[in-house]
Image (spheres, chains in turn red, green):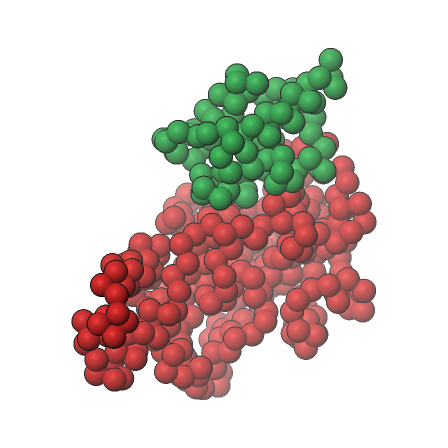
Amino acid sequence: MCQQSSIGAERCLPTAPKQDLNGIDSSVEPTGAWSVFLLRLIANGRTQPQRMKKMGSSTEHPKLLTRLASPFKEFGLLAGALYMLDRLLRTISPNLGLQVYEFMVQPIAGQGHKPLLPPNLARNLSFVEIGRGHPDLAKMPAREDIKLQRFEQGAHCLGAYKKGELIGYLWYCRQRYQEDLVRCTYELVDEERSIFDFDLYVLPQHRLGLAFLGIWHGVNETLGPMGARYTFSRLTRFNTASRRAHAHLGWRRVGSAVFVCAWRMELMFCSLAPYLSLTFSRRVRLRLAPSVLEQGHGSIKK
Amino acid sequence: MNEIIQVLSDYIRNETGHSGDISPDEDLLTSGIIDSFNIVSLAMFAQERFGVELDDDDMVRNNLARLSTLAALIQRRLADKA
């Protein structure tokens, strides 16, 4: 069932504020207000001009059109329509909604590659695995039970520190990751050389600094030498800021999926096998391979 | 100072495809000309291009968000070096 979980909240939820990973407003925010308005129009049988008249201002019309157009402008025709549908469904019931995902892969630089940050900017940064019971877990916004679930499924948390102070972190799994917003498990085909990252977070006071790049620098410097070459992730299609930020890091799209959620039912349409799935309790499995990086296609459509 | 600003402007245009004017005092983030990734890239470019070493504490919005403030920072670092 679709839930508004706190897992990976900053980057994953379609309803999250459109901020980039350093917390900067960076896109036109298609608000949900228009969809509520549309729904009310439908429910009440009002026509738009009547509603406009009631609003008492002829200038509302172009504003409404702008709002209606903004998801299409920001996401494109198909994704914009999905966004509208999702907002509409969620307005009807919190148990209804869409999850529109893209699965991405990003290279992890191994030893001998140029570091992401030059030495003078990286000298005060350090990277530590944050395990169970670590005091800095309390600084993470995810709920305690969510953090516990992450450890229980074998997740790791790489903390980035500047002069000993936590500035951000990245949660990741090896081999497989069990999605929590929908019943889906991502299995990594090249499991020895792949990780799945699912929650990158920069602490608010460290946004717009080096933290975002610093975390990826840390991934390269700590996980690269351990043999990791690829990191997979799933992005919510509507998080354009995150897509843009990660496009800088050489991400490529592996596949995409739409989950239609209605109470316990989940209907999945996916570009990867099994392509179509209808479940009421079992988890669907998607196998993610890094081949798109070598083939040089699957680029992000900005 | 103007030369530094010109070099930085050219870099931004090249990186982002922005074709309009860039005022030295314009907040590049607020205006949407660059994002927070670009801004760090811009600072790293400035390091290499002008041969200065920025500190991680320099990497804050007040220094990086405007061409004028970034150019002033570069000038200070050039003066320190001299």
